[in-house]
Image 1 (spheres, rainbow, N blue to C red):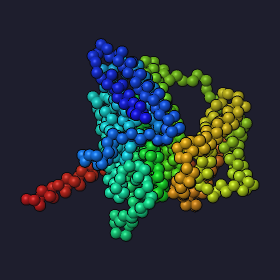
Image 2 (cartoon, rainbow, N blue to C red):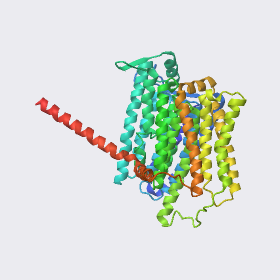
Image 3 (cartoon, rainbow, N blue to C red):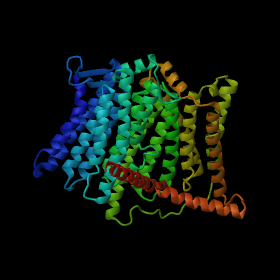
Image 4 (cartoon, helix red, strand yellow):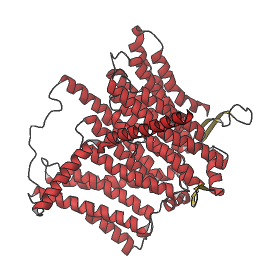
Length: 570
């Protein structure tokens, strides 16, 4: 199936067509160059069909047995996960390129920018179809360089500073990634995915980095690789590069937030059999992902810039995705990755339209001339309360108590139900803001939303899981590896339940002009804490200032050591 090679190579043709030529034919060339990248999308769909019906495609250009210049084979391995990612990347890349042709029109650096879009799509396609861990790392490295180049306008001081900050932070993750690759080869003697998984499962290895501290080989390797995924997917505390990169053109962020930043989720899924051997790494991923999801969403609510709002939204969504991986729900993380990539690319491209119109019309975005109605419908509140609390509780009691299905003994099943519940609750809470529409229509929309979310998640659970991970025993092993302590799991479910109940109570009381009576001193503390928290999250937890202070402290320490060594040498 050598035609599959055309899928990553066609975006290179797009870059070549844009870059080569004179200025007189530039407009025609940029428009014509959209066809190769569009053809790559069609080829990715065909590749997905072939892989789904006939099995994985393996293409090798070089075997280390025949040459001694390199120690790892070069080629492509396209399985179902790779094929799905190729369709997403090429499809989003096609839309972004076509949009950029008009958006960047008359920009003096348009050819370089559009060429980088084609090269970026090529690198992403090669990364997701890499034949081994070393090839994946090499293309992973190229993505870090591309993020620096895609900042585009390096003549602008803030843009250049943000690009340099991005490049520096990603270097930290890339060093950890490389250390994980070296350690994997040292322990298991191979970087081929299938051989690596087999040897890691069949050959238990224990390391002792410090006296009295032992760590398994899969845990050591996956923790290092996970740090690489943290940096690329903007996980706390390596998230602060993303807000600094927002000076780049809006289509760049459509590609970044729809494709490049999903690399962490793809990495964990590509190495799922290896991550499934380490409960420690999965628990770390769960903690990091949860923290990132909460902080990212909170910082998003405190921003007053449209691109920063979308940027922190992406950080929260990536935390959500990593959290799903930490719970062992790898296929659900891929489903989330695809859904987020599609809607975030669309939102960022529309954001470009809003920014363009705001520069031309001072009154954009237009204010709604109709004031929001203060009337609060009991029907709307009751429907939302029932659909987000009563119905899920009834389902749980019926399945566990009457039908004797041991739901509470299977964390994997509860995890899926948990995500269905939270997603539907968020959507239904949003619908309560529709005050100018008849309450029965809002209530109907709530019920339809609940059914839609349940159907989508069940589709993701059944069809998507069966497509990516057809072995039920493998899926069960991932959930077992990610199994949380009973007290922690029940505590998280209870906390989410209490928060949902309190949110509905707060919504009801605020709509009826009621408040909770608390002492004056406590009220002042609450008000001060709320204002302080808003300032803290608006300033992104002062992460930039903290890292700058840390950098200055490290430089002073190094300077003192340098002066001491010079004094001793004399």
